Length: 327
Ligand code: APR
Image: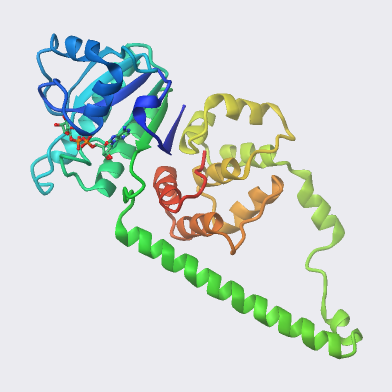
C-alpha cells in the first residue's frame, strides 16, 4: 500500500514483521541485532541456531517470541568497502529477499532498519536511497505497508549536497518573502498618507466573477480523475506513484466532493507530475495553497521546480527537515 519513513525503535513495533540487520552467523551481535535479540528473549537465539547461518544479501524468517510483532526476518547486509565490490546490489537484495519472504508468509506490514548503515559502515544517505528504491520497486507490484525506521536523530538521511541545496532554496525564499512584505508595508504606509482614489482606480480585478465561479465548478477529485485520464494513467499507477493506499484512493474516486489533506493533495500532484501552476490549481480545489513562507511548501516547490517527482526522494528530504511526509 505505501512506504513511510519514521523515527522509532523497531523492537517496539506491533506489526506483522520486523527485519533484523544480522550477521551471517545469525547468532546475535550489537546494534539493532542486539536490541532485537534482547527484546525477543532466548527463544529467538534458539531458533536462529537451527537455521545454519545466512549469506550476505539473503534473508531467513523466525518467530518473534517476546517481541510485539509476529515474525523476525533476519537479513545480512554487505560491509561497506567503498562501493566498488557489489555492495549496492547486495544491499538491494536484502530488501527484496526480505519483502518476498514477508509476502510468502502473509505479512501485510513490515518494518526495516537502515541495513548496513551502522557497524557495516554503509553511508546512511546512500543506504537509504538503495532501500527506498528497492522497496518502492517492490510496492509497484505488491500491496504491503512498509516502514523505514530511522533510529538515531543524527542519521543524515539525504546527501549533504541535496540538504544544502534545499536549505539555500528555503533561505532565498525567506529573503524574497521579507522583501515583498517590506515593499507591501511601504505601499500601505504611502497609501495611508495620500488620496485613496488614485489607488483604487489602479487595482483592476484579474478575473471576472463568472471566471472564478467557473473555476469552482470542477472539484478536487474531478480534476484528479480528469488528469489521470488525460495522462493515460491507470488508477493504480497514480495512487502507487502518490504513495497512497488503494482504500483512500477509492474513497476519493467515490466522492466528488472529497476533501483530501494537503500532503495527500500534493502527493497526487507529484504522481501526475504537475508543474507548479497546475499543482496550485489542484491544491486550490482542496482549499489549500503553496505558500512561500513555510518549509514544507518550499521543499515541495524545490522538487517540482527542479522536475524531481520521485515521491520517496521528496519524503526523504521532508523527513530530513522534520516535516510531514507525502502520501
Ligand atoms: N530500532 C531501529 N533501528 C535501530 C535500532 C533500533 N532499536 N538500533 C539500531 N538501529 C539502527 C542503527 O542506527 C543503524 O542505522 O540500525 C541501523 C543498522 O545498524 P547496525 O545494527 O549496526 O547493523 P549493520 O550496520 O547492518 O551491521 C550489522 O552489526 O549488530 C551487528 O550482528 C550485527 O554483525 C552485524 C552488524
